[in-house]
Image 1 (tube, one colour):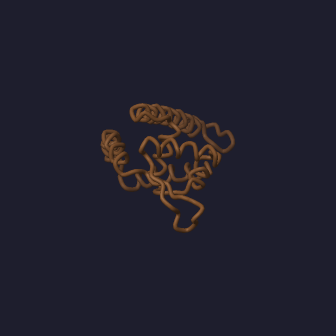
Image 2 (tube, rainbow, N blue to C red):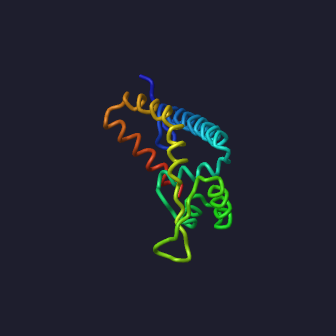
Image 3 (tube, rainbow, N blue to C red):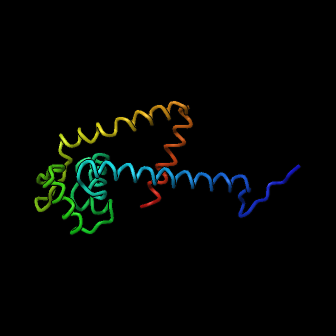
Amino acid sequence: MKRKIKENGISSRQRALRDSLNREIRRFLAEAILFNQQLADRLGINATDYQILNLLDLFGPATPGDLAQLTDLSSGGMTVVIDRLEKAGYLEREPNPRDRRSVIVRFAAAPKRRIARLYEPILARMDKLFAAYDEKQLGLIKDFFERSNRSRR
């Protein structure tokens, strides 16, 4: 019987699986970044500006300070991004009802719908991929991504 060698409490099989998983995650991230860059190029904006729109789509309207905190951009840098996106018609500013010195930034409705249509093919492919997993497995995958997202902050 072949014994599995453990290093730091991890079997060689588990180490190999972790290494393979890390490679697949890196590949997934690289392809996602390239896909998002292509979308940004199609929209005539840069990748950072595109991700600000993505965050507004995910989290809803926000103050420039909230966006700066989410992205680790300076408040001055975020102002430049917001100005650029507003000028291009992607964002709308409105007074902040909780602080008259601040504004709320909102993803403009028409560009938001146009960008959502660009995601339809990839979301359809993801739905087909998800169909291969049962509820418990999907929950585990979701848990992994939630923990991963929390660990970065």
